[in-house]
Image (tube, rainbow over all chains, first blue to last red; front, side, top):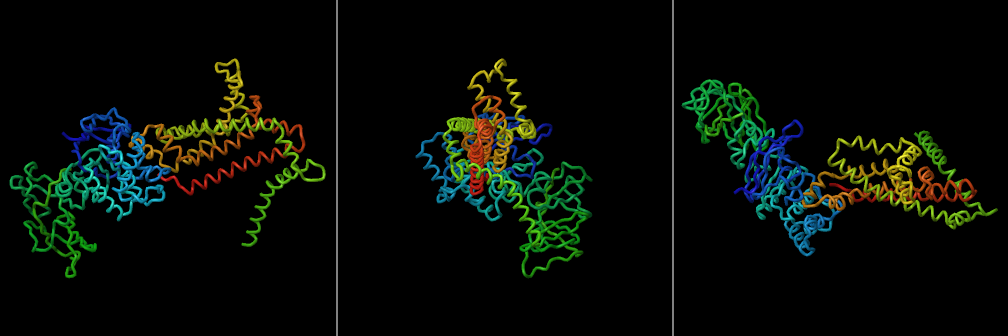
Length: 353
Length: 262
């Protein structure tokens, strides 16, 4: 049986429905990321799990127990906020001890647990400092320790890394993942940063306009995006318009060039337009790479990005980007030059809208 | 450039003189009770007057009660408006501003009409009831300052997120209010408290019309009947106000030294 179940969850603010029939099951110890743009409803779902928002419809159960009638302070859920939310009047020690004091734990137990938590985040030497005496990264680690101190059944992380600089963000996200795995705590992480979600999650929920467009492992989300939105939101992707030529043989046409897909197009009629996705890193100009398909077109532009050269080419009205690794011997293609892009037909995916 | 600087200095000196010269005059006059020499006789006379001690003590007690009950009214109100009823904010701000535009005499006549001995709630029918009414009057009078001071302090912390963080850690609203919110808006509460103290100590209209032995009516009584003591009392009243202002500054500085960042 799954540990956390969201069954047909809906949420409306007045006439606006921000979460639409959201369904999901989360296993114990899983690390789930809600990924999506601002306003897609990911934080609202998280806040409903925490109890800060009441669902307009649907049921939410944790460990088989319906949470609908429980207030946030009765759910035993740890939460880390984007704005740290440390109590400014309390020291690091008192912040971490807060939940335990509220629960009425004896002092020796509180002290031992606080020490253990501060050790976990490697800030035991800052126990007497106040939040304003800490850096953003340190404050967020204390917030994490505070949330974990009460041994919550679920840990919710609401964009905890957004307010931090890039370097700290990377190190802290690795630390969060390490602690999560060490404690085996079920975690829901909200982010709009695809790299964050891809790097630390067991599964990702890509949300769009209040619903889950796709739920899958980072590998599945990146390599086989289910919808046009997922394809465009996660990573850089070429969306190519193609015409079905023969549904029985999976033959399609891009511009005036024919290609045979690996994926079946039997669901489409001949002459129907379909959307295909191709990652920039899937193609190459070199004929030495493993490939079974090719498209010829004119180079529109070539941008030097350091380790790679991103080239844009026009194929029958579709502009396709592809990346070439930079090496001292590489000559970037020139605008107007005719080039042939080689790739595996299996990398060309049919995208539903 | 130099002429501009000179002009600025003249303006400052003129402005300061406007306040300082009468003050120096009052202090100097308060020291001239003994003929031919300066003395603290007027102050001795004031401090030895039992009525001074009684009225001063009474007003201090009233001020203290006003601050405590004012805080208990204002802090939760400002908190709930910020947290749950942001749409009510303009209404609450308007209500808290009313004591500034409605004269005290109008308010007190309203009270007397509402709470006289033949009304449904005859507060003026007993001494305790009248004292309670006076405290309520003072709370009304200090509302514009108290509410703004507390609301500004709440703006400096992220009340909503702090509340949610505390809730997720199992805290009930009383714990949230007294352990997480109150200590972080204390600088605002204290600022409001000192302003309230200064207002209550010099207030005349409410105390006189409710016939309570407060410091304000005592100041008026002494002023009408004695020569040097009123000046000494004025200096004492000034000192109380200044002390309050000084403490307010100190609290603000303390608040800045340890910013309440959420």
